[in-house]
Length: 312
Figure (tube, rainbow, N blue to C red):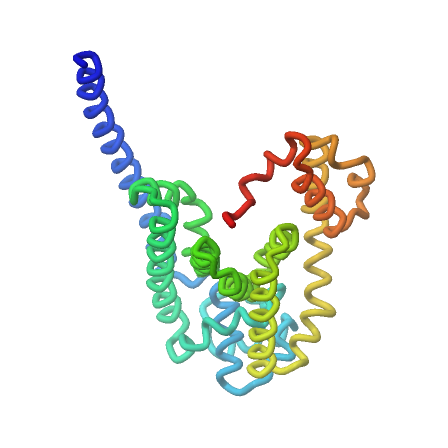
């Protein structure tokens, strides 16, 4: 008993010391974020915020957005609204990217960005609160997790991007999934995918798990949001996005995809054959091979993908 008590007495100060170090690190990271990220973002416009704001401002004026992906046309409207940003462009963003900015178009551009920055602080705090509820992690560990990602967090605030909002939507979707509300989870993921396309790849996860309610949520949510977008912006801008803008973005993504295939070929040689290294390998082929890998419970390969398995 004596040796056990001695161990506990020694461990308690060590735990307090570690906690104090963690709080000091959080303070240092938060100070760095404020100085290098939040304050410069508060003072200047920067891209990408003007791109979203300008598209929403054009829509508020009743002007069709069918030429939003025409750089010269978009630039002329920027000059007309006197937005303090040298270059703007709406490609490759989907039309729905203008929707969150619509309530802010009644403000001048810099004031609108400041409101957006304050909203982003709220989004981040709410995302961490949801994670605290779901994971039972201590707040200081969640703050460390957030502010150790200081570079992407700084860029999100500096450029007025949507990634903190998407983080919040992903946390809401995960919380709903863990509580058995799979349809709601899928619908929230559809909202995230309407801003940046990458959350749509959760379709692969739900298909593999045969979670039809979550899949129905993504499809239904996507259909509802597509209808709203069509009502707000018309069909022409969506046709141009689907037939011209999205294929060009996919071709640019091809280089990244080939690098990912090469990495997977080296990391998982039993799974990816030499054919996957060919430059013509498609996203579908890559996803199929990863699916086969994750579905194979007969060997140890599936363990590599256990982090992607949401709780049932």
